[in-house]
Image (cartoon, rainbow, N blue to C red; front, top):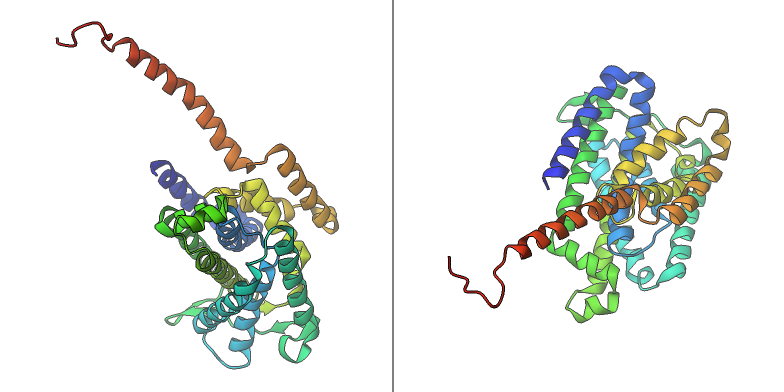
Length: 333
């Protein structure tokens, strides 16, 4: 716990000084890191702890983004109300989809969720009357809270990272809660978890809805950051990046989504002339991590620390045994 507090404090300091010393380019990259971190933190709870794969969370990002765009531009909602309404609506959609879909397991679930993302992308690009089609929705207003307007990119940067940190710390509480223990049991062995009294169907739907709400909030914030909503942001490329972030960072680790987002988003934004090959590059990273870093960077580092601390613990136990009285002696001083 103390180690996590130190790391969170270091993250806060790093995030705080980026706009001061990093310049506009670094600020833009770190803003995108925050958006991806929100999505992958929620996705990690679903995949890493509950053991339910999803390749379709870009659908929920798009729902949150378009909800904010449509409600603010066409119906005059405030940005906060639009974001909350979009998150609630996305949660409802996730609930209705999750009830039947999460009964499926393995690669069947992966294919269904992938189809969900592709269908959503197709609807967003072709339903021009509602989404604006490929043109998208422009003129999305600046985010506003209690009269304070986030009318610069730097202000939005700090807002996005405030939400990111809150979502990140919330994941800590969830994992350490009774619900989190139920999720780990569910991910380890679903039938055994059910036999031990875990409400399997309810837990898997709850975490699916929560991860969808995380994605919707990220989509809403990104729309207000750009003042624009467009489906091309939420295509197969984003799905590939999300999965690569989780695998490289470490699925089922608290810090994996954050570390993976920082590393891979930074890489994606600095590809230069190789940007057209981003899907290929992230696919290679995804495959390489699965082969050579099966626990991800965070998981492998944690394993390394555990392996180093184990010999010292064994030495302490051995030293303690030497000072214990033998069975044939009187233990009195």
